[in-house]
Image 1: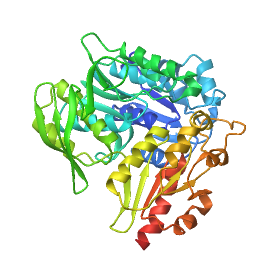
Image 2 (image 1 turned 180 degrees about the vertical axis):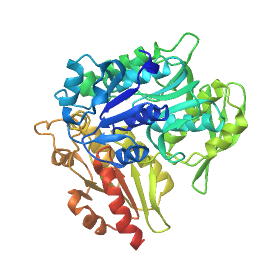
Image 3 (image 1 turned 60 degrees about the vertical axis):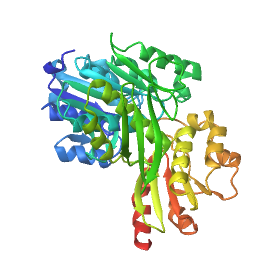
Length: 450
């Protein structure tokens, strides 16, 4: 498909983080972009401010007449859309070009120098660091991000079309539509078992992805993963290694050994060893591309993060409120490590909303173990997203497994009152569901008091 011949782009599920980045891209390239989403959000509002027309009820009658012309309309949908969606069925049954988001991303990037970031954790942060590093080095790139960058207040960085930086998403094997020049794999922990069935199938999909790299391309692999490539790690003997780590005024200061030199006294502002690892692989990919060391050092120090990735909303001497997207036990462990490193002597309250019945079921014991580490825990109901309930899988069932004397099952309605009843000095909200909508209420309530 030649996208130059397409004028109308119709998005089904336009409010998704990946979908909205594509919508921004096409809008910036003077395509006529409209779409549907189930609910209004900050993302849909920001798109509408750009002039993108969005409706929120599934009806063929809402589709503008010009988008009913097959010859110049492309329909893009997300796998999160149910198969019985009226608009999707109409387009599929009437001969339209109907593609998944990942397929469109593959078409956009195939004629670019593509750098792809894969892994069950760390994709969004790593992609946004890499996009920022290369943008500061004035590389002519387009970066599609799976979160809102604090540096650009967007999930799209536009500085040209020769280079693309993308997340390679393993969910429903989406990343197999990409053929990158450079690719990294940050982690291969079991996840999405509703799609893969077992961890071995997930590992196989990462192996298949690594085979998609173009001839003479490069694969970067975190040390310890069962794939061969340029290795990276922290305080080990990898090709790219971080050493001499210090924390100065809440900022990491460290050295990086590359295959050719040592970069000294680099600075990075995001807490947590997992974020140091993300910064290292982004730096390694940018170095291998040919970005100059001095500019990379400045860019790394100026990186601000991604919204909902260890995002500070209140930060005073007496009270700290942090929000994070963590929704897998390993991600919760990483958040716990980061908060203990930054606040070793303060009481920490974690408020967690499980995401998906299937993920809760598959990793219940690991969730219980990771959540037991906090000083105090409040557990919300499971956020179903695209799923129907699974019998016996509830937050109460998970709650019983958690070994923490200071734990409570809490509804969103009573959340603020329950937080008031805690004497924790650090509060964390954690999860990938609509817990993010509670952040503004918590921030408003406790900014007044702090």
